Amino acid sequence: METMDNNVTKKVLYTGKTRTSGGREGHSISSDGRLNLELSSPGSTGNGTNPEQLFAAGWSACFIGAMGIAAGKLKVSLPKDLAVDTEVDLVMAGGEYSLQARMQINLPDVDEKIARQIVDQAHQTCPYSKATRGNISVEITLV
Image (tube, rainbow, N blue to C red):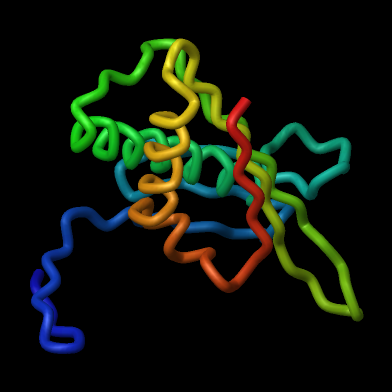
């Protein structure tokens, strides 16, 4: 499917589809059945995961992909043991819920200046980073 937005043609590359019932104490399944999990509220005794964990996992994976693209443009190889630790907080402020996030990027054996360039470029191009930019507080740290 292609759409026009601000005179730019967009081609949909993939659509993730899920069906969720029961909210935070419910169940989610993807249209292909690969994701099939129970949900539990943060801090509850339930056995399921929660939306904040799912968002953190998705963002981390996407960010690593964006770092790969950035590293390729800089003609640098990413280490196989790189890691992104992402924390997504559910916050209550002024009687309203919101999110905030922290990402710790571990790029072992990569020069700090090059690592910073990779991370900064990835944060500009990662679709999750774009979606959160200006909407939630995000801290990104190289460790």
